[in-house]
Length: 155
Image (cartoon, rainbow, N blue to C red; front, side, top):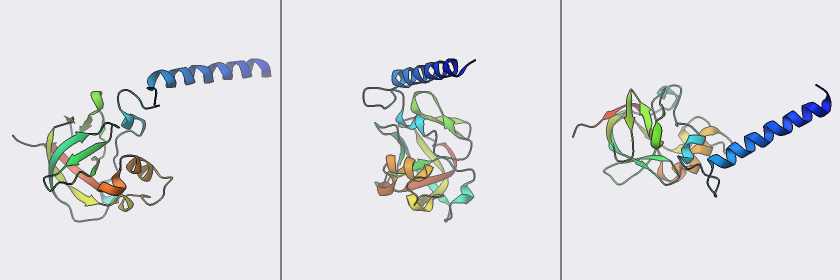
């Protein structure tokens, strides 16, 4: 294939990718399913990456209009959730963690630590994954709950 053919092929690939991206996004550039899908599920490779005293955690999952997942805690706080390792997005904007699915309104219990966004790896670097994702989700104001383990709360 000559240089002209390669350019046309590349232009075609770019046009298709652009069309698919625009089709997946609403008018404001946010996907219809979940804004969080672009970042994936906030999680660490190992909870040991964040220091702090682990304690029992209890709260209710809340999915914000921008797709960010928060934990509504009885004390009135609503930190951004960093899920246990190997968590993944579930359908309808939820999360699969420790073998269970969690959606908006689900009560959960677990173990973890409440920290500031800057306590996460590179959380103070505005170009890092956690700073970008957490900043988008308001974690610089609300804080972060790093879950080491999670389960559905008994009714």
